[in-house]
Amino acid sequence: MARLPIYLKLLSDQFDVGTTNISSEELAELGGVNAAKVRKDLSYLGSYGTRGVGYDVEFLIFQIKRELGLTHDWDVVIVGAGHLGKALAGYGGFGERGFPVGGVVDIDPSKIGGVVGGVRVRHVDQLTEIVQTKEISIGVIATPGQAAQSAADSLVAAGITSILNFAPNIINVPHGISVRKVDLAVELQILSYHEQRRVNARRVTKLQAVPGNGRRGASA
Amino acid sequence: MARLPIYLKLLSDQFDVGTTNISSEELAELGGVNAAKVRKDLSYLGSYGTRGVGYDVEFLIFQIKRELGLTHDWDVVIVGAGHLGKALAGYGGFGERGFPVGGVVDIDPSKIGGVVGGVRVRHVDQLTEIVQTKEISIGVIATPGQAAQSAADSLVAAGITSILNFAPNIINVPHGISVRKVDLAVELQILSYHEQRRVNARRVTKLQAVPGNGRRGASA
DNA sequence: GTGTCTTTGTGAAAGTGTGCACAAGCGTCC
DNA sequence: GGACGCTTGTGCACACTTTCACAAAGACAC
Ligand SMILES: NC(=O)c1ccc[n+]([C@@H]2O[C@H](COP(=O)([O-])OP(=O)(O)OC[C@H]3O[C@@H](n4cnc5c(N)ncnc54)[C@H](O)[C@@H]3O)[C@@H](O)[C@H]2O)c1
Ligand SMILES: NC(=O)c1ccc[n+]([C@@H]2O[C@H](COP(=O)([O-])OP(=O)(O)OC[C@H]3O[C@@H](n4cnc5c(N)ncnc54)[C@H](O)[C@@H]3O)[C@@H](O)[C@H]2O)c1
Image (cartoon, rainbow over all chains, first blue to last red; front, side, top):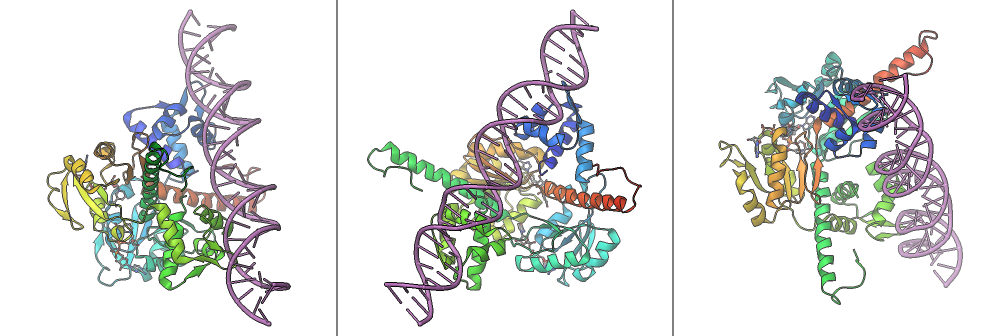
């Protein structure tokens, strides 16, 4: 379930603050969701709550981590050592959360040999070797859009089975490969859609406030 | 609908390639979704298709843009001029897609006065002035996690109504404010979950291949 | 015109997710 | 050890989404 990482974050924060026990109600409040949903989600892991008491924070964190496969680190390999690739490789939050950068590759000779985030940039041709040696399963695409498909193909050929794609293009991969896409433009456009609706709503309100000035019914 | 930005991207790409007309089938193929879903989504905009022919690419782009409120630019203001804030401000793709950076603010005096992406970094106290002057509706949070709530409060106080949050914390905002969150750790954890399931699946297969060696039923 | 071919737009069915409401179970207090 | 209060786990109904299937409608050839 896609909400487990959120619960994990909330629980980890609570654990840091010293909370040892938490109810579905409190957790729901923190995450801004329904308490019944929290219980349904958690019951999927097994019956780890105590009726009348709640959940043991530390134990629940462990169970979620186990379910998410976070009991050990997963190295990631980044394709594209441009602005984004460098920012990601240099960002400590990656490794802290169990995803150390195990390799960075690029196609541009001027980028190869440089060090970003403590890792040497190597040529994309060496991807298979890096992936096999370090047993990497997750690849990150940080190339320009038009190179994204080629980067995906290289990753798949190297034996990667999960891809996080930052390029604003949809990539085609064989069945069985997991892909997640992070597209800033899409996020901003969804916000802009909400803004647009706000503007429209205001206009309708205004028209309604001046009787006889608007057509009947709220068109568009 | 959250899929409109994706159709917009696909259609824009097709337009650039010279396609003037497209069927729901082709569009579905490009986006990797069901053709009926595409038609339902597009019919929400109105009846802009021609039976037996398909959709006029340019006209459809215009209609989607209108629906998403992309007929004019929306300036955004970035809070936090650190690694991520600088990368975002310097990233041309923002402005190209209709979201120019209208301002960058930080709380650290050493950051203020510097120029990123052609914009001067100003103090967070001047947020209201920047937002009001430039009529900005969208704010981006690129501060560390513990400062995210404070950044959100400042944005709301300044009059922002939509927030894109890159910090890995959930922020509380008044009713009526739209928030979207981009959390890399969550994305990676979802991928790791899939990887974990693959590992489990392999283990189960192996146990089944050696009869008598495994308990009955696939536990966990 | 008429017929045929293609593709839309949409009703209905199937599937998925959400939230309420409550019994079951645990701890605690007397 | 029994009653009470609190919280989980889940059956059920409802809402929303996805997919199928097909009639309606335009284009094009003749
Ligand atoms: N910079 C940002 O803030 C930002 C934000 C959101 C999305 N993005 C997206 O991230 C992607 C990268 O952005 P960027 O600003 O880092 O671009 P960039 O041009 O700075 O970096 C791209 C890098 O990819 C390398 N590359 C190109 N083709 C390659 C290939 N086939 N194999 C391996 N490496 C290859 C290039 O040599 C270059 O080093 C783009 O798709 C962009 O749309 C960037
Ligand atoms: N760097 C990355 O690649 C990356 C990737 C994913 C997520 N993130 C997230 O993005 C956020 C920023 O990351 P970063 O690497 O840019 O951190 P950073 O430390 O480089 O930058 C943070 C900036 O925010 C400023 N700031 C702090 N409190 C503020 C406040 N109250 N108001 C205004 N400005 C304030 C700081 O002065 C600093 O300049 C973090 O939450 C991080 O988890 C970063």
